[in-house]
Every structure is written in structure tokens, then in C-alpha cells.
Length: 308
Image 1 (cartoon, rainbow, N blue to C red):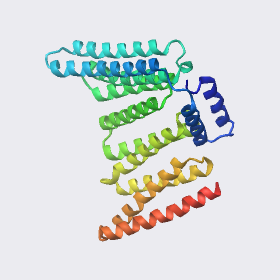
Image 2: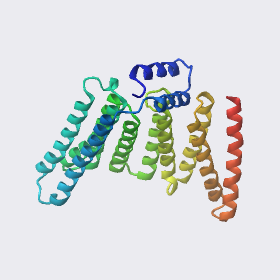
Image 3: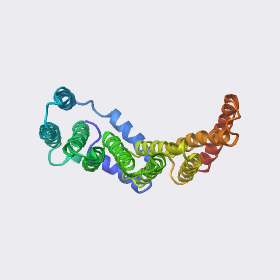
Image 4: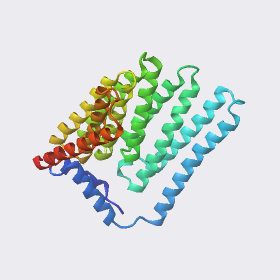
């Protein structure tokens, strides 16, 4: 079997006490899992069957609705999607048992997959049940279910599902109520990324490297959204993200933060140069500027690693 729940908790306690960093914990965990006994064939068959079964439930519901959507009443549509959601949730609970955190890694992956599929069907169920603001209601419902799924089974897939649901919810609310959509959605996604990074650094979102990477990507994507209508806001947000990543790296030794800071810096400096010169510089000059910025940030990152 792979690493046990008690071993996993003991390893995490070392990280909490500062004996290990988050990256070191992930490396040790991966090494232990790789050297463990191979999973039983029965576990693999069960895992595969759960994946295929969950996919068939979702695909069957989508096919049924796709072929008969116009002929179905709203109540029938909600019934089909709701039944698929309940089936996925019941299957997840049945596989997980009374204590999901104490089961084997194979069963945890199965439960996490079924919950993630249920997030999708729950979102569509809620969106179909209402006659207005379907995107807002559906995305918000999916986010609530994703939060519950992550709290029950905090796996990498659950973390990605939660991130996707959170992004969809932010986009839904901003596009529904914001006057200046690019600006508001950019600032909202930027704030969402920062919140996600903060929760990752305090070990609420796990695995930490993945949560940090998703959070940084979300913040960078949001920072670039106002580029067309409010370019200097986009520059300020992107530069602020780079500065925040470099500053956080001084306290938290995570390569993800360093890479995110380098990427944000390499993006924002050529953008500012292009804007200040009113597009007069050619592509070769921009490449030269981007290369110089990349070299400079590489030197800064080297100094930061040595300082650490």
C-alpha cells in the first residue's frame, strides 16, 4: 500500500513545525509513495470502474439532455441533472465510507473524482432550475459544492475543481452586475488569486505547490484583463503581482513564487515599453527588452536563492 493516513499526518506535522518546507514535504511524500508496495489489482479495477462509471453517468445525462432538450420541460431537465448529481454523491459516499480521510489513496482519488463530477452536474442543475441569472446561480452552487468536496477530500483534483468553480463564480457575478466588465473582472480575479495564494501559504489549500501555481496564474490572468480599456491598471496589477511573489519568496522558499514573479516581470516590462513609445519600437527591440528583463530577474532570483 501507499503512505498511510498516520504517516501522512506525521509528515505534515513536520511541515507545520517548520522542520520541513512545503516543497520538501511533497518530495518526501512522493518518494515514500513511489517506494511503497504496488497497489492491488482489485484496487486498480475498482478505481477504473469508478472513473468509467462516473464518466458514463455524466456523459449519459449530457447526451440525453442534448438530444431531447427542446422537448423536455424545465422540471424534467432538472430531474435528470439532479438524479445524476445524487447518483454521483451517493457513489462517492459509498466508496469513501464513514471516514474518507482514513481510506487508502486509491479510494480517496475515486471519491475526489466523483465529487468533482458532482460539482459540474450540481451547477447545471441549479442553473437549469431558475429562469433568470442562470450563470450566477449555477456557478455559485457549483462553488459551494466544490468547497464542501474539498473539505471532505482535499486532493489535487479537488483543489483544481475548487479553483475552477471559484473563477467561474467570480466571472458570473462580475459579468452580471459590473458596468466596466474587463476592469472589474480583472481586479476580482486578481484578488481571488491573492486570496488563494494566502490560503496556500497558511496551508489551508493543498497541495501547496499546485495551489500556489493555480493562484498565481489566476492573479496574472486577472491582472491582464483591463489591458484594452485600462492599460495602466493592468500594468500596476501585474507589477504588483511580481513584487508580491518576490517578497513572499523571501519568507517562503517556494520555486512557484519565484517563477511567477519572473513571468509577471517579463510580461509587464515589454508592455510598458510598448505603451510609453506608442508602439514605435519594433518586435526585435521588444524581444531585446524581454530578454534583458528575463536576465535581470534571473540575477535577482539567484540572489534571492542565495539569500535564503
